[in-house]
Length: 559
Image (cartoon, rainbow, N blue to C red; front, side):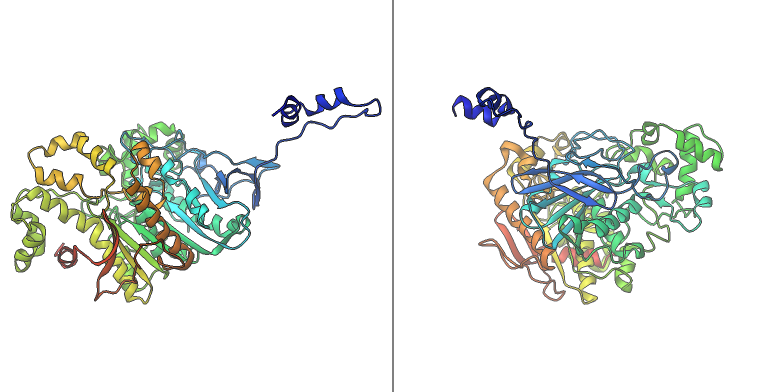
């Protein structure tokens, strides 16, 4: 490029023209203004996002008022309108929490109590009614947010889906009871403020997503772990009716509520209510009483004091005395997923669910007899064959498998079967693929030292898919998860898994409208055939459930 061209390409064009002009040229055009980013007007004002190649992103969009001051522990209120154009190019704060080392989806913001924001990715220039997916992150209801790189929605937008990721209140900010809150609530729900945030975000999507080119009548909600459990809650909640058209649950259970059947105000045996826990927390914070003055003192506590180090790793340290999580409040959460699905009292939509081959579960049995006892004496031989096929008598491994089957894997199958029984198309998956980098990292994990005397258990943990490991494949963000260690097979599995999720959002069928070469058809679930799609080391395969014996035993266990 010559000197004149360089000047023209820069902001110095006006100076160059002045120097070269004839005497008749007495005015100079102002310097060119850089083009603005893409703009969208929602019900509270105009947003300016950012465009990168064929993707446009609008980040840090307020969907509700900051839940601070008197709005701490209140149902979400409408976001305020703004004048002019609001820049929406960066993610906003994730919700208040204590991040922990080793999180598979590390935050990229400083957590804050002011956190009710969402992010939208769309194809550039989209004008049609595109399908919409709303991501609800996991993290045990105490961690997580919309900022992690593995949750980036660009690849969904590339493939013709508008992706929305949301924040919702966590820990004691999101799930908290206190007698004064209950007394003042009137007809409003209490305690489950995090769930209320999710519903408010879905209402925002319903009202505003058409401005982005999305179809408000074709919204798929999906989430993992606590996010998957949240999807079950939304499916069973009358307050979420009409806010979504399809649902996907990744490792989110499907029978009981993930955090149990704790009540808002009624103490149960060995299960104190949210109000009792709130009073205990107040006392631990030096606040006496249960009236409005005590509530005002609680709302005046610094956010860090309310958080008090609570995280997934430190959650058990808090105990049920000062934190309890979501509850059965009678308005947002009215029954367990199992009761909702078996009674037909749920939001009926096409459904997809599954779990990972070494999903989360906590087995504490000390002997094989203790581990197998819930299956009953009648099924003991079958259970022994299913959980100790090699006859090694490995109690720790059997107990781990039984616990993960009970907590995540069998409940996913139960939910898929329940949807089928209600005449709805449903699809089950199993994620068994393990990235080479993940296996190597797990082998080096300090927790392996606890298994050093149990080679069989170590081998199982290292070479099976752990809880949450499917997420970067669903989002096709494996390079964000594994960096330079990402393998060609990782990329291929991610492209395959991501396409199934995209297809389901578009049509309600993960195999339509288009599959990649070599990907199998994922059949609608049929109880008699019991076929699921298994993401294996050799790619996706439609197979009769390889854990069928274990699933049947778990479904029939006594407790």
